[in-house]
Amino acid sequence: MKKFLSLTLALLMLAASASAEISAPGEYPIVDETAELSVFMGARQDVEDYHTNLLTTWYEDKTNVHINWQLSNPTELNQNYNLSLASGDYPDIYVYSYETSSAGELLTLASDGVIIPLNDLIDNHTVYIKQYLDEHPEIREQITAPDGNIYSLYTILANVEYGVMLKLWVYKPWLQEYMEATGNPKPTTTAEYEEMLIYFRDHDMNGNGDTTDEVPLSGNYQYWDQGSDPMLFLMNAFTMCNGQPTPFVYGTEDNTVETTVTTDEFRQGLQYIHNLYAEGLLGEETYVQDLNTYRSTTTVPKDQVVVGSAAAPSAFRLLTYTGDPTFAGWEDYECLEPLEGPNGYKGVPSAEDTRIILRGTITTACEDPVLAIRWLDWYWSDEGSLWTLYQGQEGVHWDWVDEVSYAGDPKSVKSLVQWGSTQNIYYPTGWGIGYLKDMKAITAKAVSETFKDTTLATLYNRDTFMSGYIFPRSTPSTVWCTDSDLITEKAELDTLFKNYIIQSTTEFIIGVKDIKSDDDWNAFVDELGRMNLTHYLDVLTAYYYGT
Image (cartoon, rainbow, N blue to C red; front, side):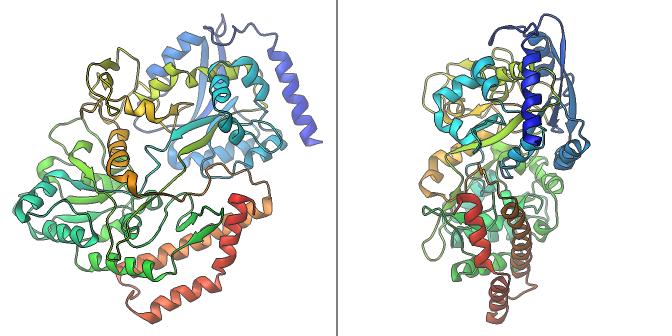
């Protein structure tokens, strides 16, 4: 009955919207007289004001659609989203990501009368969304629920920024000094990397007369599974070790889920990392500081740098870009290629080649779904997506120039703006609506370092020396699991095993447990057995692959 009422309500809304004076798909303004929509969305703190943001005001003038924003800061986004759902007072549109949860939750929202199917709206009232799905039937298939409906729009990411999340960065001036002083090359093995860290520790790298304030290697624990914990990068010199989407496990070509945490190679990796900690090379603050505290140690004047090497998935997680040339910037750090361990192993786990993030649902509270889908459609156009990707308007904030691109083309995209720590021009990638990030869009950017964004360093990192070491071992990003019992069990086991493994590995690294002790190691492995690790892997296999 609930599904019938939901469908009936959606059809009534569509019928009602058909009588509204809305322009044809792709024509603007959408309406002659100002209309309003309410939109729930996450709000980044580096945007001054979403209400007065240039993209907001410019697009309102273009469409005649005024947005009543319901904004949430990132730390409270999940909580506020759930509170909104529980209240029953829905906005017209939720711009909310399902990348870290089961897409099957959309089916529950549809069954509960919260969101409506988008199939007919897309096919009959959009230009850009429909065009992309027609050109990429495999994407349409992935975003289509088992019941045949599309309930959410999408963001497409060619695996550039998030494909390889586990990275170690090195401060270039320190690296250069180390290589010149020792005659050693840039580290390519765990032994060479340790030797470089020892040099950082024992020399006054920042020239302030104090040889004790340098931190050879640092990270943070707030976003550890996204690569902010150096353990994840370093462990991949010994054996496969994932961070996201599910820590410590990986998908296989046989559509099963496995882990390496009980292997001798994993233990050997922990021994290496513990040794770095014991020698004062890995800062103890790594396991207690949040992202802001971490970035406060890296976002400093160049003559006050204390962190020589740092873990971060991308440049904006490494430090806050200030635009001040006297401060260390993203361009002052470079990534290491995957290190080779003592057994000859090296690699880096990667997500799928194309990552789909489900983002953008229309609710049953929306009185005019056609207006809503028409307003959403432009964000998937070239103009709309490039406003986000290249940060602003063509010819105003960026332009095509006669400079070689990353792809080697004679023309490239170059920023016309010196960006600071905040801006009021665009919605940052990953938080706004729509956008399609593919390799062509990224490689169009200029080789020069004047275009300050997070994807350049990551692209350089991936497409040069990382490309030969990437292991596509991620579990699928779009999961249409509808078994509520399985979803619940998976979530509970995720928390149980994640917390235990994190706690144990951290204790091994900082010496609370002795990684060299067979008794301590066997106790760790035995406890995983008592927790039924095998069953957990079976649950993950069933959840991700349906087997």
